[in-house]
Image 1 (cartoon, rainbow, N blue to C red):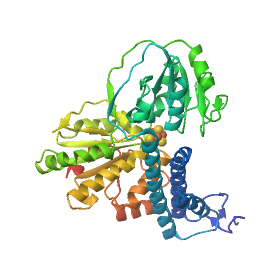
Image 2: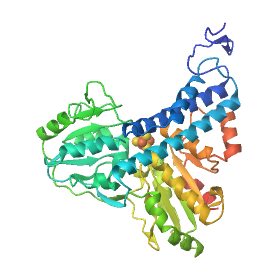
Image 3: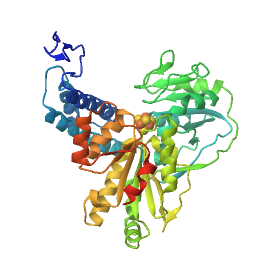
Image 4: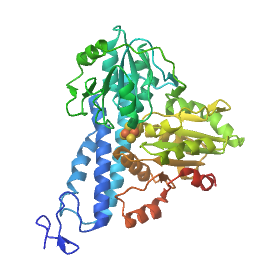
Length: 428
Ligand code: SF4
């Protein structure tokens, strides 16, 4: 029996899959990984394009890479390895483009403390990743007695001067994306979902949540363009929020532009033995108690360590007060997942200062993941030749043992179901 797509059989029976090749499970694995990377890459391209930024090289790569996954186009395993790394390179380029767009539109990020409670008045809670949407909403709600709150990956918005200047951008509520159903049920105001990681709403708040842009939820009002009048009218028709301070304040707004000026201090602290190790702990968060191990990991790190973080994985531990080392914060929130470029710039600058390679720095990457953007970023880090990355808490389900073996051999990729168990190995 043969597949009518490519005349192949899988285990003696006809292949019924269209879209990924089942004849060779390693090629299938790499094709799936490529498709996930392209999805993540496309998200960054989409947001940059919204702000008026494009890159013809990335635009040409995406259809070429997708085309390569068509049935019976390419059975060369090595070419798929290369295509995955190329997707990583394009992701780095896209993140760089988006960072440039954010800085040119909203200013250089600045460290800022963000309240986590509510203020008396009407409210709109904005979730997702889209800074342009947040900006347009802030402009349209100015002077209307409505306070704007961020959720999850929009926390770093508070660090941008052009967004922070709106005094009604009040604070951040909740943690990573998956607390939406509980948080939104309790939040009495209007809600706006701006990007991926939006959950199907509960009936309690289905009539006060809106979607915009790429986001869509069945039965939920969608905003075309950037006219948020229906969201504003809904917010004004709902009860006011109470004055209710949060239990902690979050610090965000770091970037290579405000961390690298500390380079002399950082180098001096390293040379004096006051900083022994840097960690990048971040990535995509997901439900489950196993992810609490990332909090435990950060809590248990020795006092002579510094943690850089980004993306929503940080909500497992970003309420911790980790103090400073000679004026250098021990917990540095670099922003959204696409701000991984800042972490790379910091690592590159430190490597130059210490006249070594990034892989020779006392730096360990501890990534949590589940989402397509995380796949794209991982490919980007591997395309730079960064080795010894710890990935967890679950292995990627689509990666076959052979593909994993290649990643382990070439990049020393390490899987960990609990980073606490791997801490001694990381600290060397
Ligand atoms: S960091 Fe990842 S999991 Fe978290 S909101 Fe962004 S895409 Fe979703």
